[in-house]
Amino acid sequence: MASAVGRYSPEFRERMVKLVRAGRSPGSLAREFAPSEQTIRNWVRSADQDEAWRGNGLPAEARKELLCLKRDNRRLRMERDILKRAVRWFARENGVGPGGRRHALEERETCG
Image (cartoon, rainbow, N blue to C red; front, side, top):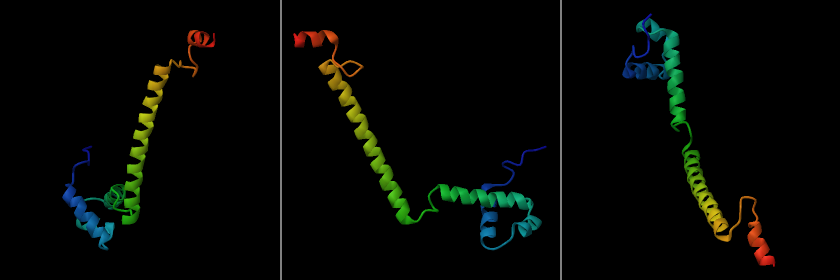
């Protein structure tokens, strides 16, 4: 059985989706054109999901807030990474080992 993927051009699929959104039923389009009713329904559902995924389904205010939050998240991650590197650097400079304590030899020298 031949695969139906790629059988219809993207332009044709788009046209079918627009016709359904304009009020035509998938059944009437299926009778008039070659694809089945379920195929047309699948194209409409897929187009709806694609548009929502791209952000077209979000109101402008929500989209703006999402971009702002993403920007803040990126900045905070960068700050966190810088602080992690600084802590490691200071730990090496001060001789603090993996357990968070100075090496025993250095402690003995300073204590006594």
